Structures are given as C-alpha cells and as structure tokens.
Length: 166
Ligand SMILES: Cc1cc2nc3c(=O)[nH]c(=O)nc-3n(C[C@H](O)[C@H](O)[C@H](O)COP(=O)(O)O)c2cc1C
Image (cartoon, rainbow, N blue to C red; front, side, top):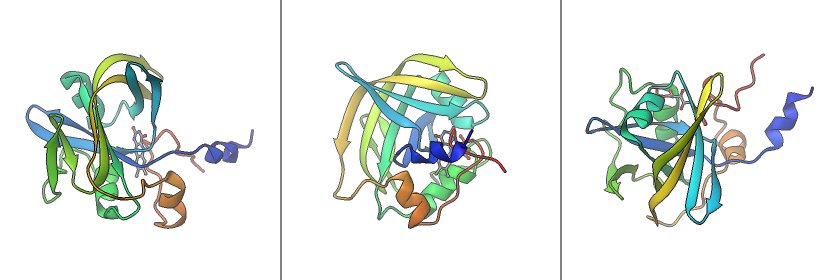
C-alpha cells in the first residue's frame, strides 16, 4: 500500500476551539468537513489524547475557525504542538467571542457547532456538529493543507489523523 496516496486528499487548516469551564482553548486541525447542508452539519476528527477532545466532549460545543494564508503561523504552532492541558493557549492570542465561541482574530471565518453525535475510532473521536452560527470575519484566502506544507513548510503533528510515521 502506498500511503502517499493519502496525501492526495485535500484539506484546510483550522483552529478548533471550545470552552474549558469558561477558559478558551482548542487545537489545530485539518480534519474538518461539511457532512450535510440542511441542517448544516460539520464533522471533525480529534485525537483521544488531545485535551481538546475532552473539552468538546464536556462542553458539547466547538467552533471551526478557518485560517487564512496570511494568518500568523505561530497560531498554528501554538495550537498544534502544545496542549491546553498545561498551557493557556489563548494567552497573547487576540480573539473575539463570536456565536458564543472563542474565535482567534487570525481566522478569516468561523463555524460554531453543537455536538449532535460522535463516532469512536481506535485513536480519534469524530464529532458531528450541527451549525449554530457562522460568519466571515475578514478578507483572506483560506489556507489549504497543501499551502501549509509547501509554502509555510509546516510539519504534521503526531496526533493529526494525516500523520504518517517513518
Ligand atoms: C497542521 C496540523 C493539523 C492537525 N490536525 C489535527 C486533527 O485534525 N485532529 C487532531 O486530533 N489533531 C490534529 N493536530 C494535532 C493537534 O493540534 C495537537 O495534538 C495539539 O497539541 C493538541 O492540543 P490539545 O492537547 O490542547 O488538544 C494537528 C496539528 C497540526 C500542526
């Protein structure tokens, strides 16, 4: 099996946020997709070891914050390679509460969701969320995962579903 074929799938780059008992937190994710249009539903796959997984599970809400090509890569790194378990990830990261969810100002659009179902795999939980609010917050070209790799030269984190080991 040539796992490089999996690289041919296309994604965006997102900050998936939630509330941890009143404290904003979240993680970087590429694995979000729209599942249905009416009602609008979104699925996102979050590693069971990620602190964000338990936060979404407990709060029942998440927001997909869509990053743009000009978004500060520091936001991707901070949310993608550190854990909200021992870091206040939003400390020093400007954000605005939109649709009752924390949205980094680096994002160009956001989609707020209420968890309506979830599926467990051996490593990840796929959260299915019904869209409760959405908005475009500024101009910007949404960042693709390919742009993240080819232009920003970003790395894939071990807990990302797309991670391919040696
Ligand atoms: C570009 C990129 C994409 C990622 N995609 C996902 C993803 O789709 N799902 C996931 O569970 N983790 C993904 N990760 C890894 C998490 O962001 C990372 O494990 C993070 O440190 C978890 O933080 P937390 O413990 O605060 O939840 C990705 C990381 C990067 C850098």
